[in-house]
Length: 191
Image (cartoon, rainbow, N blue to C red):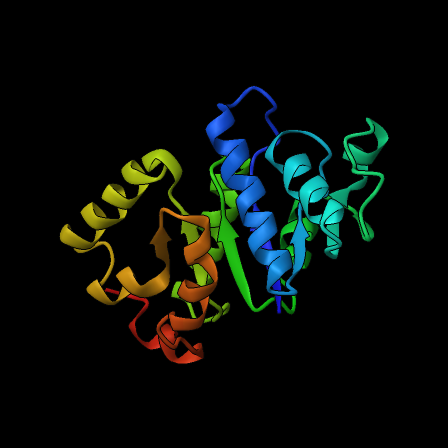
């Protein structure tokens, strides 16, 4: 299996998020999963890559060249792809993956998550999206999506675009049990 993981580059977040990230890395390596991520060497990104590499996992980074120039890229992962810009990065991150996992993060993580959410709503991305809701981090986003559905900006079917889990050990089962989704989603993308 090959999964994309969106996560934070901040090194100042609570240890609780680092511990959850280590558990995610271990769980994915235990299931022989290739991890594709943003290529960073610090914060949760660095933690994810370091832990997976220490456990013998395969880690693929995707990093814009401007970030490489300021040495944000991880130097010890299995493979690094340097790309032109953030758009190309997002496109390559989800290419040929079996699922997307979002860990807690800042505006970059949120933007990546919402773009893939939108692509799935339109039937352009059809794989499971799993959101790790450590410490109820994504509770307000989940409430906002629910408000959008209640106010008829989206359909009730769009609740199935992602699955929220609280425990890293629930990620693989959530991927395997995610509702089927295909390109026909475009037919009910509009409200």
